[in-house]
Length: 263
Image (cartoon, rainbow, N blue to C red; front, side):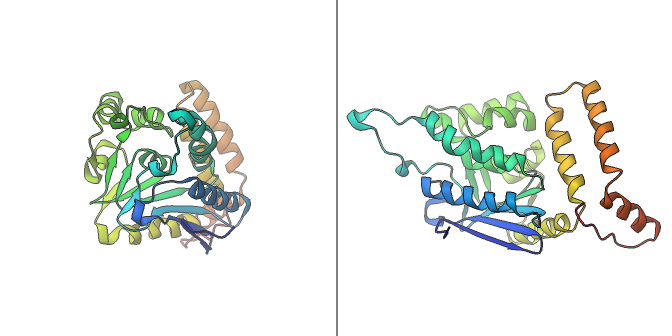
């Protein structure tokens, strides 16, 4: 597929996906959903990819849905927004969360509506200090979607999530870091340097272990302590037999940098 609304490349074990509709703050259209879905299929199918970076072009990360791309049904009836979620946004969130590799998101500007929640679906979020996060749905008489009502309370608690959802007020990158909404806020000029450093680290790291970390932490939200203790035991038993674990121990013993194979 030829891409018009995104940039996508693969190099040295890393895939980089950039939303590329800067004149519309990288808001989503049906075409863009199709191109992102195709790129994610390539990520899922390529065993050589060990990390994914998502960012945006221009002054915004993603403003969510491009409202101009939605048509009103004949007779003036409203569009079926549930259909839009079922066909596009929900599958996108599931795929990002379910990837068996670290997903780094570099938020370079405003992340609004579904755009903010796409960022929160990543494993590690870096944001430029000028970036802002907005749950803009209430201003349109809607509920936060794309996982917003589920992940936000888990990141920042009910009171702050409720405030963001009901008021639609923007949260700065520094405030987002202080609240635990993102990993780090960095100077604008340093955003991609910091993001690429993480990408290079993960591309050279113990991929199976990273996948297990993701699975353990995300699944723990639905488990009791006893269930999670047993889960940790089972994962540690499996990972203790991996080539990466053997290499990590050998490198530590020999006081050298490990050469992980991702197996």
